[in-house]
Image (cartoon, rainbow, N blue to C red; front, side):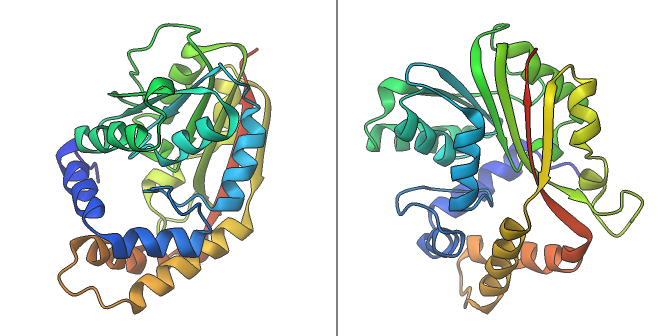
Length: 251
């Protein structure tokens, strides 16, 4: 099922108004106390991503499908890089811009509405691209990866976190995840030095998050209710998915 920008706008708006959901995610995933995440990358996973990107001060990171900008802003703070964040939700972009100001990073962070397959950026304009837990929404995946390569400078790095089906033929898994095969798709998009690894520790942390979300009294909190709905859906096929970290270079 395709989710529209309007649906994501509502989802982000609900999340911003829910300190319970944010605190649960930060605590279980081990994230920094001021990082606003709307993805499922753990704190330890973020450390791995930072190392894989290899950014230096002054270089430019494209945080593609950035949501509220939490991961990109944290990477900018750690490395001194500049970050350009794109998301197709205007609500998410507005909150990311506000967050950059709050963290004192507005001079090194810019956020705009854009899509996975059409960023609006110039060719060879960024040093690294990060796509956290969102590549499955690209239609098709290959077009998003081609766009990543187009905007990357030669030698630049792309890092993608996502889920893949343990068995691509298992129809119990979401079609969006069954069509992902980054080990094959990244070379097809022209990337080299492709490395795709399973990350079972991330997967275990996510399982804990979904289980704890189900134990929370949601009350009238729409963000927590949404988390619980997603938890039931995800846990039903949890063991049929692999958690993946992919890294590759522009030749």
